[in-house]
Image (cartoon, rainbow, N blue to C red):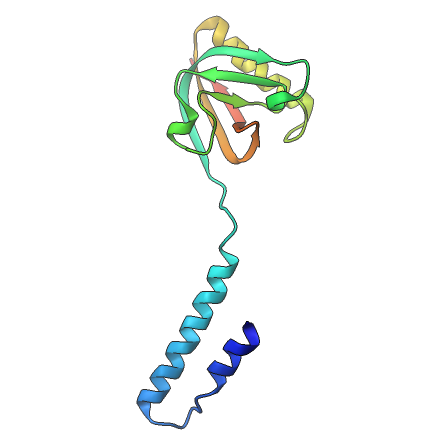
Length: 142
């Protein structure tokens, strides 16, 4: 496809009348746009941050949904529709972060649940377990 488009671009010589030069420049613009759009087909990851209460924590014996999760009072899918409803995963399976860091984030969620504190959770939709978005950061607020 690219060689055929390149032949179209090189068909109009630069010394022709201004209208032909305009058409030639238009073809170059169109070709450039098509090439750029071809590179932009990959999905772009999005990140979001929300404040919520922790309603439940979950630890699984296997690596389903990353092994550990927290249910939040604010739905993460409200900001990033590709995320699963209600839950975020900390990836205790070690796929997106190391196990120690994941369990520390789970500890923060448990602390917030036990003390009824609000958490600020930063999460992304480019890393998911079972459709649930990975929490990159969790802060327990006073």
